[in-house]
Length: 251
Image 1: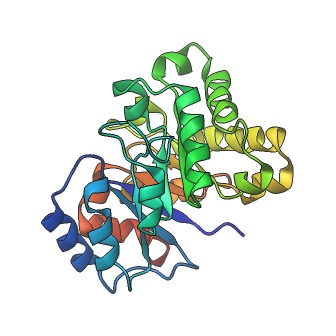
Image 2 (image 1 turned 90 degrees about the vertical axis):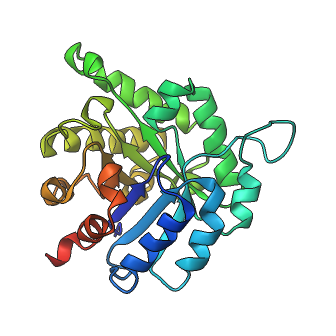
Image 3 (image 1 turned 120 degrees about the vertical axis):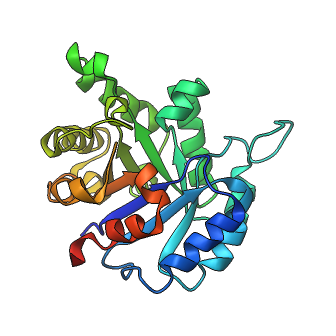
């Protein structure tokens, strides 16, 4: 049984005092981890303080990115070994903004996935499609290709630790994909995992939808059989909205 997963991606938002205040505002109001797993991915420079503040709460703190080498002459990058030493569980990999603004390739994403797993953490791999690809009917090949490339060299026993987030960039910050469009993408991803590994592995992997998710459309998305959760951007920055999202099944 896959536990529903609500993951917040704060991106380059909030200062340390704001992040700690957020933790205080959600304290004691989160669902049990075996009902809904909740995660906040924040800037690396205050992950440690956030983890300390949230230590007794059923919410995990994750990183938004890491480099693919554990150490070396890579000025300005973040070591996955260092992040793991903080006790971080999850790392976002291959977000559309990383691919677009920082020109991350499928090979770079794959290197980061393997680095995260090597250091005992769990990657949340983001895969994308653009409206241009959707309109030209190339979306199937594009999403499948990103999944296959991200999983190269990853063993089946490690693949079961991975979460994949389907985030069509045409739906980010605008109108969300319909529940059926999101389901189609997530179903295709699960079938791809089954093809790469096997059906049992595909059934263990959680697949999230990301793209203009908010409380008003979450229930329809989460009702779909192939969607195990959501990856939320802007809507996750407000503590009350975040609480609505993680407590969606208590409404």
